[in-house]
Length: 339
Image 1: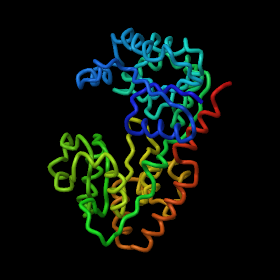
Image 2: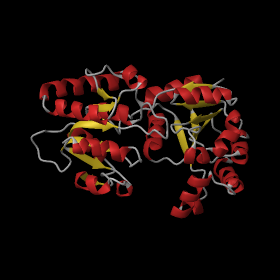
Image 3: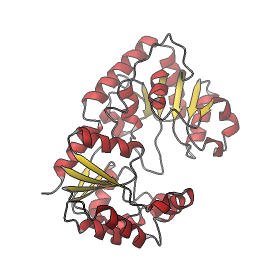
Image 4: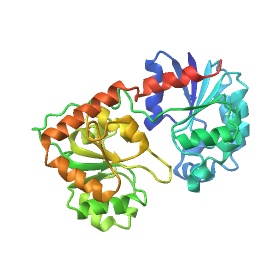
């Protein structure tokens, strides 16, 4: 299949592009932003305003990019600032139009502003793929033509099992790790762990903004990991890996929920209906209801090497064999495209 992928192919979006190619599809990536809009100022402006005032520029840029394309399918990644004019350009190609969303366009706050244009055009898509039960119902209520609900996914290559020799020294070794961006609810949570004596390591951006920064600073290991294998190495070298959710994004699972076990880490995450469906508690992953229970679970895991290893291996088997990876999810979406 000849697929035009409309979006910025970085991070997990790039993983999905590569997964499509592994499945045998020809994929052309089209960044909907004009080149001049790639500066820090314009990236922030587009993010904050849903590209207010830039719709004609985006439409003209898209027209130049895809005027000669003859795609079998157009896949829009997120589509948060693609309003009526840009979507009109895409629809003119006459190909099925699919939107994949892993953020929450109905969550309110800044996300609500980000997806203002998307909500204007959601009825234009032939298929919308979402990763939350709430979004599935909200899309249908808003008039979406067809909605499919999938899970977030890890990547077969980027998150492949990462082998380590535990007897080898590594600067990424840790007992309990959290890898992720600071959100307001995460500072108090991690501070509770620290105060409970959990040997914590933190990697991620914006942690200096946390009101708890001075107490968390001794546990901070850096804002970024090596872009090639740093994330996988840090997960593999951690005895316990925390999977924290975004309350603003109404998460009940995240890509970390699959990436951590797939790589070979032990997932220790919030007890949600989604997580309990994905993994058997205390057999394939460890769950908690609050920071105090999380601290107790971490201490118990660190004190029992054999139990920790059994859960880690069982969780990895579940993640790798249950359709939680990109290729299976993409196949599910493509099969659901109306003919």
